[in-house]
Length: 218
Picture (cartoon, rainbow, N blue to C red):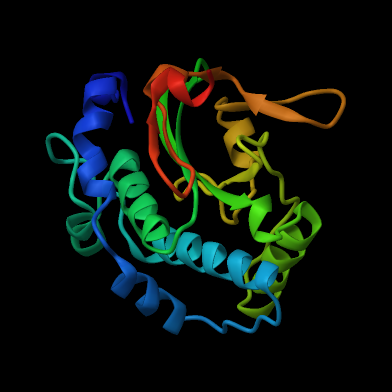
């Protein structure tokens, strides 16, 4: 996403209706494409999130020769830029009750603003960090996908968020390419964060309602 196509708060409000489109049929299709070998709730949540990310990353093309943002089914069929792919992924997750957060970050290294989605795992559903991490790893071992460290972002409303960027990351929770590209930075204590986080341009869904911009963090 370049500076000329930066999301605005009004863009986000206008595209919430796109994100609320029911895409459970697409979710079912994606599940059918993978070996969904899970045995408990945590693995089920992790498997589905990993399947959605892997399918969109490998099968939905990146296409930026269009104005505005695309409805999720248009992106599914014809591809789209990073914001479009966020809308598509968020729509799929909303259909299944998954929280999500669209994050806008800037890389000083490339002078570029990029939108990516973080998928949420709510603790109120009995999910734990270790269980989600193990479930994600099990998906990647079963399908298979080479993966490295699985990292999560900070929690919000007792929801654990994992970055699942379809442009820069090969697995859910993979941040190394985002670090290498200047969108994220790793700290000496082993934690990480976004380099320049445009919080006013973010959107999030907690499983019940949608939040826009700074109200996510207030």
